[in-house]
Length: 119
Image (cartoon, rainbow, N blue to C red; front, side):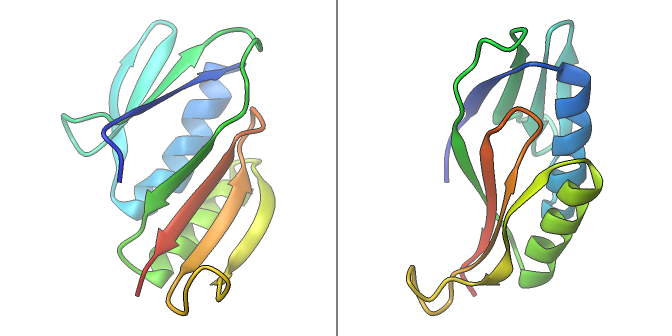
Protein backbone atom coordinates (compact mmCIF):
# COMPACT_ATOMS: atom_id res chain seq x y z
CA UNK A 1 0.00 0.00 0.00
CA UNK A 2 1.17 3.53 -0.61
CA UNK A 3 -0.17 7.04 -0.18
CA UNK A 4 1.06 8.37 -3.51
CA UNK A 5 3.85 7.88 -5.99
CA UNK A 6 5.12 10.31 -8.57
CA UNK A 7 7.00 9.34 -11.67
CA UNK A 8 8.41 11.39 -14.50
CA UNK A 9 7.46 10.34 -18.03
CA UNK A 10 8.73 11.12 -21.53
CA UNK A 11 5.35 11.09 -23.29
CA UNK A 12 2.41 12.00 -21.07
CA UNK A 13 -0.23 10.98 -23.62
CA UNK A 14 1.30 7.48 -24.07
CA UNK A 15 1.70 7.05 -20.32
CA UNK A 16 -1.89 8.12 -19.59
CA UNK A 17 -3.13 5.56 -22.15
CA UNK A 18 -0.94 2.82 -20.65
CA UNK A 19 -1.93 3.48 -17.03
CA UNK A 20 -5.60 3.82 -17.94
CA UNK A 21 -5.45 0.35 -19.57
CA UNK A 22 -3.70 -1.34 -16.64
CA UNK A 23 -5.39 0.43 -13.72
CA UNK A 24 -9.06 0.33 -14.79
CA UNK A 25 -9.19 -3.48 -14.26
CA UNK A 26 -7.91 -2.85 -10.73
CA UNK A 27 -10.70 -0.35 -10.02
CA UNK A 28 -8.70 2.87 -10.43
CA UNK A 29 -9.35 5.76 -12.79
CA UNK A 30 -7.83 8.90 -14.23
CA UNK A 31 -8.77 11.12 -11.28
CA UNK A 32 -6.98 14.34 -12.23
CA UNK A 33 -5.36 15.77 -15.34
CA UNK A 34 -3.61 19.06 -15.99
CA UNK A 35 -1.13 20.42 -18.53
CA UNK A 36 2.04 18.43 -17.99
CA UNK A 37 0.60 15.88 -15.58
CA UNK A 38 -2.09 13.41 -14.56
CA UNK A 39 -3.16 11.55 -11.42
CA UNK A 40 -4.67 8.05 -11.13
CA UNK A 41 -6.39 6.44 -8.17
CA UNK A 42 -9.79 6.07 -6.59
CA UNK A 43 -12.28 8.74 -7.71
CA UNK A 44 -11.25 12.03 -6.13
CA UNK A 45 -8.10 10.60 -4.53
CA UNK A 46 -5.26 10.31 -7.05
CA UNK A 47 -2.29 8.38 -5.69
CA UNK A 48 -0.15 7.83 -8.80
CA UNK A 49 1.05 11.06 -10.35
CA UNK A 50 2.62 11.28 -13.80
CA UNK A 51 4.65 14.36 -14.71
CA UNK A 52 6.04 15.02 -18.19
CA UNK A 53 9.77 15.70 -18.12
CA UNK A 54 10.90 15.08 -21.69
CA UNK A 55 12.87 11.90 -20.89
CA UNK A 56 15.11 12.97 -18.02
CA UNK A 57 13.67 10.40 -15.58
CA UNK A 58 14.97 7.38 -13.73
CA UNK A 59 13.02 4.11 -13.64
CA UNK A 60 10.97 2.98 -10.65
CA UNK A 61 9.06 -0.10 -9.51
CA UNK A 62 5.45 0.25 -8.44
CA UNK A 63 3.24 -2.58 -7.18
CA UNK A 64 -0.53 -2.14 -7.29
CA UNK A 65 -2.93 -4.19 -5.17
CA UNK A 66 -5.40 -6.32 -7.13
CA UNK A 67 -8.68 -7.61 -5.68
CA UNK A 68 -8.51 -10.88 -7.62
CA UNK A 69 -6.33 -13.01 -9.83
CA UNK A 70 -8.62 -12.13 -12.75
CA UNK A 71 -7.79 -8.46 -12.16
CA UNK A 72 -4.06 -9.30 -12.31
CA UNK A 73 -4.68 -11.08 -15.62
CA UNK A 74 -6.62 -8.09 -16.98
CA UNK A 75 -3.86 -5.70 -15.81
CA UNK A 76 -1.29 -7.69 -17.77
CA UNK A 77 -3.43 -8.07 -20.91
CA UNK A 78 -4.40 -4.39 -20.90
CA UNK A 79 -0.79 -3.32 -20.49
CA UNK A 80 0.37 -5.42 -23.43
CA UNK A 81 -2.43 -4.00 -25.60
CA UNK A 82 -1.32 -0.48 -24.58
CA UNK A 83 2.23 -1.20 -25.83
CA UNK A 84 3.77 -2.18 -22.49
CA UNK A 85 6.38 -4.94 -22.47
CA UNK A 86 5.99 -8.22 -20.63
CA UNK A 87 8.27 -8.46 -17.59
CA UNK A 88 6.61 -11.49 -15.98
CA UNK A 89 3.36 -13.18 -17.03
CA UNK A 90 0.55 -13.63 -14.49
CA UNK A 91 1.24 -16.45 -12.07
CA UNK A 92 2.04 -17.52 -8.54
CA UNK A 93 5.45 -16.37 -7.30
CA UNK A 94 6.18 -19.16 -4.79
CA UNK A 95 9.54 -17.60 -3.93
CA UNK A 96 7.59 -14.62 -2.47
CA UNK A 97 4.76 -16.63 -0.88
CA UNK A 98 2.43 -19.50 -1.85
CA UNK A 99 -0.43 -17.05 -2.46
CA UNK A 100 1.51 -14.25 -4.20
CA UNK A 101 -0.15 -14.03 -7.64
CA UNK A 102 1.38 -11.27 -9.74
CA UNK A 103 2.19 -9.96 -13.20
CA UNK A 104 4.88 -7.51 -14.25
CA UNK A 105 5.10 -5.03 -17.12
CA UNK A 106 7.54 -2.44 -18.38
CA UNK A 107 5.66 0.79 -19.10
CA UNK A 108 6.43 3.13 -22.05
CA UNK A 109 9.12 4.87 -19.95
CA UNK A 110 10.95 1.76 -18.75
CA UNK A 111 9.37 1.62 -15.28
CA UNK A 112 8.61 -1.83 -13.83
CA UNK A 113 4.94 -2.02 -12.80
CA UNK A 114 3.28 -4.92 -11.02
CA UNK A 115 -0.18 -6.01 -9.98
CA UNK A 116 -0.41 -8.46 -7.07
CA UNK A 117 -3.21 -10.43 -5.45
CA UNK A 118 -2.43 -12.11 -2.13
CA UNK A 119 -5.27 -14.67 -2.41
